[in-house]
Length: 252
Image (cartoon, rainbow, N blue to C red):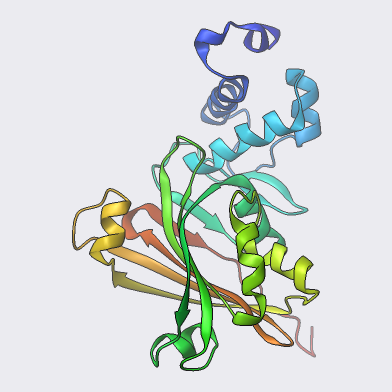
């Protein structure tokens, strides 16, 4: 393994070399499907590097579809072959925060908009209320590939925080929580298959009429919506995974 770490720069950045090595181990069965990968600390010690470098390598494995990562549960192998799609597995708000940390958001615009009769109930506002609208594209990494187009809506009471979104490495809702003192008590999510608007499909490099998986998330506090985000994912590149466990009944 020492040879891998010390190879020259022509072979790419260190995280990329570690990513390739870990991917080969998964394909060889060294880390079988269903097994947990070594922790970030263990891998950092093995490769003689930082946890941030290991985290970047694991992020690349997640993009490939080899593994899934969960807050407090580690990195689990879910496939032994590479997948071209984007996989998202959510079981907690912490995992929503991790997605923002593991990917790269480019804001294209922010503006003030008045909610119309159709949009108001979707974001949790009232018709004619003025909210901030932030549009952008989430990428796998700088110079990577686009994951989805996002339109986020922030109620007027929190619009003053929106300028801080630019250049933020992290989740919008986490920043809004910290700036407002309002704690998210639940996240409501609607998922539907719709045709992607032409303006969005062209920004993602997709043909006109492309189908999308649209995820609308509303982050709710005791004062109402903290932020609502509409994510447009290419339908053939997105897999959404969730786990539902049966609760223990009175007889269990």
